[in-house]
Amino acid sequence: MITLKPVLINKNNFKKFGTLISVSNKKGKVINNGYATKFSNLVNLNAFKNKGSPAISIFKAKKRKFPLTIDHLEMHPLSSQAFIPLKNKKFICCVCPISKKPNLKKIKAFIIPEDQGIVYNKKVWHFPLIATDNMNFLVIERIGKYKNLERFYFNENIKLKL
Image 1: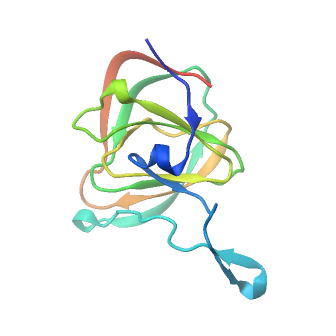
Image 2: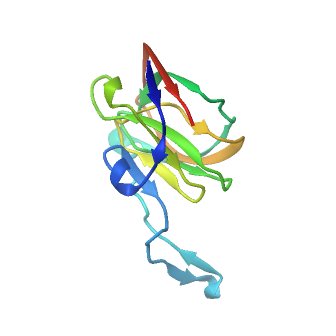
């Protein structure tokens, strides 16, 4: 059995899987007569391969129960995928490095703090959205003509514990 204990995400420990969406240590531009600060171009969403285009969606996620059984992973071969919580709550991600099929010995889990989001790089294996509360997510992903989802199911006994 593999037991996963998530660690707090940071840009260094997540960089081979994707990008952390955060305004920490970023310089913004004051707009709207001082009533807002704009942080532009925080990530590059790679969505245009094979005539794809970015789509903005809302995922209504249900709170997961832990320990959570990790029995499959998915990946998007044509684009990145961004998850931004619309509630000030942490969430969890479970990832595996890019490869033809996931190497389960390299599976990792991360806690994403309340004020941050993530972008998975294209071809990074990941478990579907893991919400710690019933909440909505703004999701930016590719839509287009070609299939952009692959799933890999396995029989390993992997448990994600908080």
